[in-house]
Picture 1 (cartoon, helix red, strand yellow):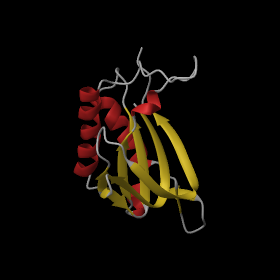
Picture 2 (cartoon, helix red, strand yellow):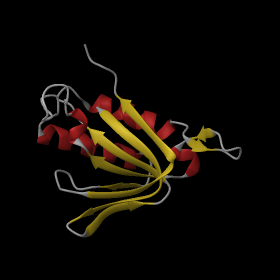
Picture 3 (cartoon, rainbow, N blue to C red):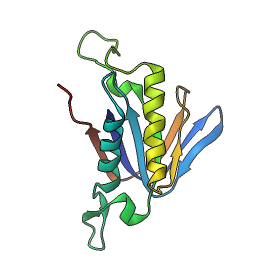
Picture 4 (cartoon, rainbow, N blue to C red):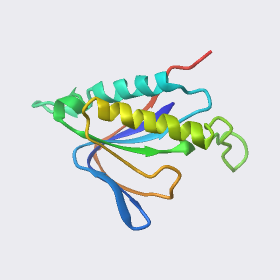
Length: 149
């Protein structure tokens, strides 16, 4: 499982002109699921995201986590994170999970975040979405669950 996380002062997702999710201070999470991923991968990434110290403290140093600042998550499914662009000019998506597996793990990730008491908004799975954000910093990280053998 892969995630691109961006520290934001605001972010929103619109589908067909309707807002499906929006947050203020927090993290925009673009979440990709591979064929090999399991619930343990979702929990690993969620734990890493929630506790990653990437928000500024009183001295301006990245020393506070999402929970420390009371921030929210905006989670958007992003199968293109598993696009392989090494050959030719068209990305290949052989590593991306099939839609039902990806939906299940995406929903599991969102549910697990909500069970932790986090404020969580989402995009719409498999929809064409417009994502707007104000990246605070800018601060952007790429995270990946441990590789399986």
